[in-house]
Amino acid sequence: MLPSYLTMAAILFCIGLYGALAKRNAVIVLLSLELMLNAVNLNLIAFSKYGVVPSLTGQIFSLFTITVAAAEAAIGVAILIALFRMRGTVNVDEFDKMRR
Image (cartoon, rainbow, N blue to C red; front, top):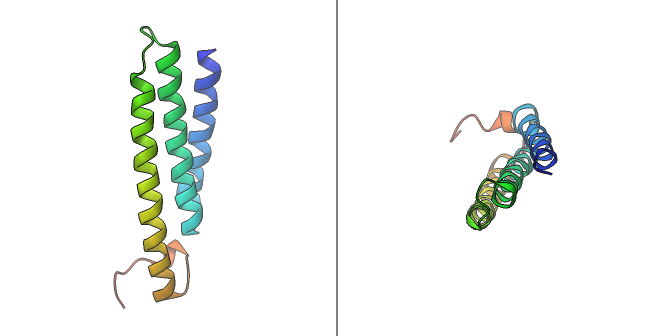
């Protein structure tokens, strides 16, 4: 069972990495980062259940990761809204300067 979870997590992480590196829309980049964090959570829970010594440690770390991801999403969306109001676009290529 462990290899199937790890394969699924690797596929999710690769999709998220592609989205973070190749896409130019800031919303897609934020969603890709969330996808990568969820792949890490899947690995933590899989190793927690099927590891050498099964324990709740991976699940507890997964809860911390979910908390950090929620804070990252809230702050990222707030920054993105402020940038959209200032520049009128969510294209990552346009955010190369702090001020005009």
